[in-house]
Image (cartoon, rainbow, N blue to C red; front, side, top):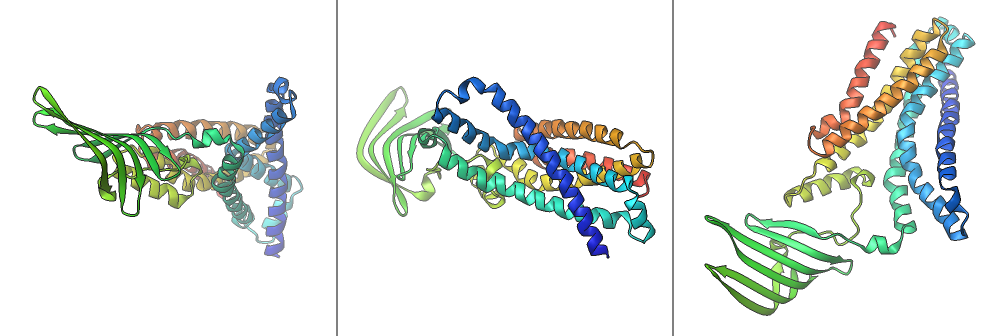
Length: 350
């Protein structure tokens, strides 16, 4: 019997969730179509490009609307069950509220997993295959620390294990002054070292400068900073393990990795946020259905969903710029709403 009831509750929740999600996505897509109507039908290529760009935006749209959709679907599900007195009948047969909300929580974890797959596998695939190849090949120049007194500027990177227009700066601290500038020209990655050609070294001694030219020079891998020779990916679309590895690698090179740590925490916090939305929806539906005001709980849930989204985006932005600790930037909004959910559950004795 409990298994049949769990399946029934899960199917009811899933029905409302898919309907609400389709409504949200359709509203956004229709608005996008009408705002670009003059450009869509100029040519067949423009028509295809528009829908490719729309497909690229779809995972991001889903990520934003899924939390509020889960909240609304939970309230709609229990509102419908209360309207037909099914919850009362289940309670009379000894089935408590937590048994009813259990299958919804499991479905929420599945929804979070699907969203994770879209963000970290489907989106990168679409970006790699659908975006302009010229855009993918452009790699920005880099500044890298090579040691306590070394700074590298890498002007050009290619996918053929080659760098060009590399400049090395060395300085001394007492007194603070530049003591060497080396133009490394073109470098190619070998098995255990970088081989550079057209090397020009400039040493600054007093008021003069000594220039030495070498045809070739080799730098061991541990003396030249690690560089990415492929198109960099947004950490938001990197799987957990890759985000962690990139954060460790970039931090060793002296770069700011606040955004990477924020994204690492956010991948866990997002799943928890969906669970929190289910708990809030369950508490609101129980509270308002006793007074026959399901519409009020739906309106309140929309407001809470908007507040959660705004608060979460503000926290993430502050964490990425270093104004908030990464863990709090990712978990802050979820913790605040978990406190709200706990208060509502205690108040309604659930």
